[in-house]
Length: 582
Image 1 (cartoon, rainbow, N blue to C red):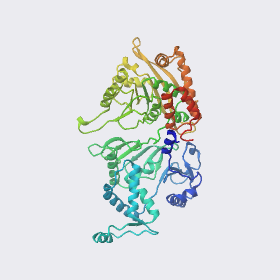
Image 2: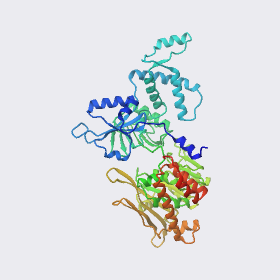
Image 3: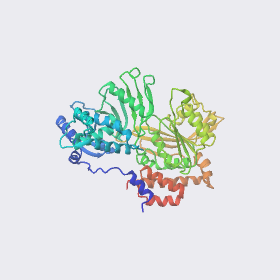
Image 4: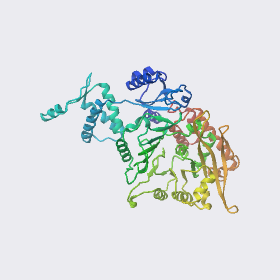
């Protein structure tokens, strides 16, 4: 008998990839484009890269820095820092490695695509990308014939065959050519075109493209990297940006040169189209998000927060408290927001409102809405409209992807009417957060501010040993409005010590939210008993860390046991859970 957990694990399995780290020879034998690249690189630079395997943060200590790592085979990446005295010394370069085609094969590709576009409408409908790709591969098998050597079919002969009823001649290719052509055709028609190798790399955080210059990237392990990818001419760049903007449903034009949207993998893209606005030529920035949602346990293991802080958030969200995740740009706010959402009761309805779809909710009852841009004001749907609609939908929680302006006032109205709100915001500490909310353009009255229960503050900091890391540097409770002081009372619950790189709980026997709001809801006779409950949950979360249950689905499914079957079953499941990665 196959359990639901085992069935889910089967669905998540990736295609097998059996090349062991260090086996560059095996990698070259398996992937001809890697062999060609390594041979060319070695001839030019006099050194051969190592094969690292899937990349981890320990790779930053590899010296000399000359390594190939797996992204999504057949895509790989090669990171190289030239030695002192060599051209480019002091920089780190990133090379995207993928199957490529020759000029002759480029002509074959064009003819294949022409036939695909002509004949695909007669094929059966497909429901997802996997079915679309399978259909393309099947059609390419039908329209080609493999031989030991490739010969371009003669168009004149093809026309003659059609006139006498013999049909189109199959396109002759070698098996190796067909493999490369399948990759390139799918890359361009279904996936991300010339940016496929970049978007396949989960270690990239931000991708910056300005005009025809080489694309640069922020990397999770290495410093700012310069890639081997650049657009050949302005026409190709313009065509790509138009196509990309249409695919994300936010067409760019000379009259509307700046758009924001989300790619199919959830990554956020900002396009600045037109050299009137971007002097060095059209540009775009992609902020990548991991395809697999990062769990709260993974964040704890990365030291973004502590197990005790996670237990505190768990108590808050289970009890219907309103919370904001606040911090600077690229501090990891959305990642943290997604990671804490499984703490919300799994038996309730969740409503999300976003400009770009980034929030990921695994709850069964999830109403997901996004804004809609339009030149016609009557058909435009803004965040303000979504939040007003949320109040009529009666959800348990309203999740706002990002609060930027006047919709913040509606968020506080929702809190006042008993709808807990969770969202992200740009402010580095509780004082600045209050200043921004109570000032223009949001203008939340100070006396209403205690509807927000607590806020967590996240920053990008220097990681031990170099590089950058994300840390939740503080958690503050909002106690209420003090008429005497004419101000809002707050109290810090958690503080991060940058020297020790540790988080300390400052709220023992001092938490207004735990003692006066959550303890009564949970039925504790003594409000101080809530701290024992905090400790019990801290130990449970730490046990998940010790057992390395870092996969998002494991965390959600375990919490699902808690919300549907109670603490005892949850505690038992915690000890026997096999885990996705085990």
